[in-house]
Length: 98
Image 1 (cartoon, rainbow, N blue to C red):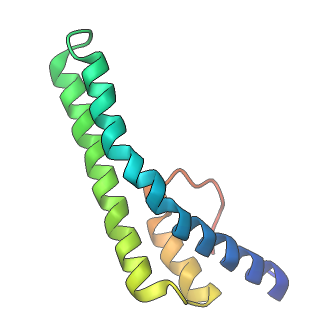
Image 2: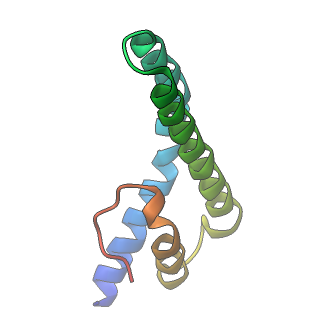
Image 3: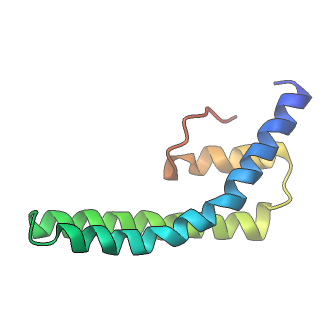
């Protein structure tokens, strides 16, 4: 990867992490809305399990963002790429990191 490509990737990763929080703020209310809409129309246990999984992923993502903001908000490309390679599974990223 050229230095320019590494710089661009670093900027994209920082941008992604800076803008992920607002989408997470919407996740909680959306989970409640979906459960309310589907309640009594689908099997309750399955709905509860899906809602719990969605909530768990949301909480996990908040945790990852917390680590990023405390330790990596000003990180260089190498450290940031390693961090994202470790936690990319928590988001549907299709970009191969590292």
